Amino acid sequence: MNKNLLLAVALLLSMFTQAQTIVNISSDITSDQNWTNNNIYVLNDRIYVTNNATVTIQPGTIIKGAISPQGALIFTRGSKIIADGTAEQPIVFTSAQPAGSRAKGDWAGLWISGNAPTNMGTGVKPEGGLDSVKANYGGPDASDSSGVLRYVRSEFGGYAYQPNSEVNGLTFAGVGSRTVVDHVMVSYAGDDATEWFGGSVNCKYMVMNKTLDDMFDTDYGWSGTLQFGLGVSDSATADISGSNGFESDNNNVSAANYAGTPQTKGIFTNVTVVGPKVDGSTSINPNFKRALHLRRNTGISVYNCVFTGFPTGLKIENQQTADNVTGNVLQFKNNIIAGCTTPLDSSTLTFGMEGWFNSNNNTVLANSSDINLANAYSYTAPSFLPNVGSPLLSGADYTSANLSGNSSVTPVTYRGAFNDVDWTKCWGEWNPQDADYSSNLNYGFTLNIAQSGSFPSITLTADNVAGATYAWSDGGTSASTTATTAGTYTVTVTSSRGCVKTQTSTVIGTGINEVSNINSVHLFPNPNNGFATLEITANNSSEVNVQVTDITGRTVTMFNRELTSGKNSIALNTADYAGGIYFVTVKTSTENKVVRMVVNK
Image (tube, rainbow, N blue to C red):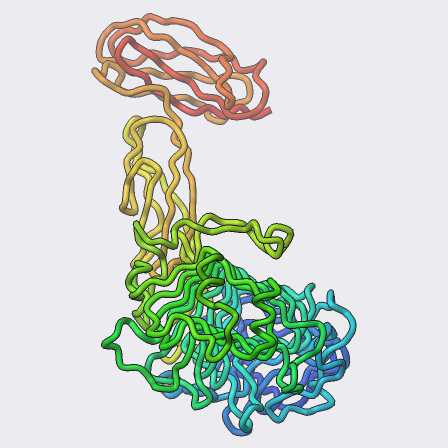
């Protein structure tokens, strides 16, 4: 093997090694760090980010939590996470176990502590056995920022440290409103998918996928907004404490009245919660309880949402919570409860739950299938888009003061999380158990369009993307289409993961060949800087019109010439032309020929 080849092999090996470098994180982070996607980061313990440090994570980076000692990443008050992924390169926190061996609770999850208010005061001790000093949370700053979580997945994190003291797949503890949470998916958590302990953080496009306990858990005075959320159940797995779609408390400390300010008044709109029951014959874990369990003086409000397939739909518990209903603090409007054996449950409370429910434009449907979703019960390739005729495609209302004056809310016409666009595509992962996390993530692809042939039959060919679908603006559905008229052609390519790219190509031409008398048109020299020869070979004698236009379509010169059979040469004086691109068109009564001319000045 020669020396150059040896060097090339060594370079390739070094690149391969670099792409899969394992970086072990085994001690607290006390200064700013940049985590890059050419590494895989392994959390070998409970890692606290302290001292106001910022961890910036590059799109496509994978972070793994070890099992023993159990890994976790905890951002303390004042520290920040900047995990700003993309649809094509999401950032993933997941189990360090190999594909096929991952399980709920493999690692302790992602915890973020902030300085926003809670109704438990400031410096609140965390749950789940976390360090009570390092991980405490809560403060006076409702607009505090703990950073960015965008296009992020958290998988197999969270566990029950002891009864009523757990960590979750993702925990927001006193997190403020300037924190960005956008397109986040929490899958197979060992306790709740996500829990908000107070704070004021606003969230959009969140997925809670097959968690052990509750999907959306809010307490201690959370006052933010969540729009476009999805919760999905694993029918075989639920927590002994009782698994719900929503669970919401004000607090659980003062049993006399569960008082405390700020009150839990978070706002949910456009959320789809798919419970474990497809229909009455579905066998489910008996620990599944309610689509919504609202208790302990909570004042959350829920609008334009759909809840399906739980034993119980909406349960209101405790007199204080009922008082929030009658006092119009807790609002529940324009929602659908479908396929729940007991749609409404207020136990011994006597505030008139059914009348209140009906008067606020809410609907009970007998079957989960009545909401008419495309494929909601597939575990590895679901679709939650409403089919034609679904009641979810209309009926949204944003006239409530909680929504109409809320800058975090985008009014739409539909209820639930989706209309005709699946925002989980590309970046989401429904089968993290078998996902390949051996190198960084990049679901993207290149998209170029090549032109071949001559006008008026130009073949446009887009890059081949395995398993993709193609949609051309002229109606074509394969990688290639044929352009017979001038203009701009656009192709939209959707990969098998649902990643989408669009590209355009412009076809230049001025007519369609019919009966051919002109064999060929050539121009030389091309480029030229003052003089060119136009050579036309004709089959028969005929008159032609020669027109020169610039790139904007403006005519620069035009004249007629008589051709003889055979080769004809016509001089073009370009001395007065500005430098640039021109088009020379040779016309007869039945055909056009176009050549491009470049003038260099």
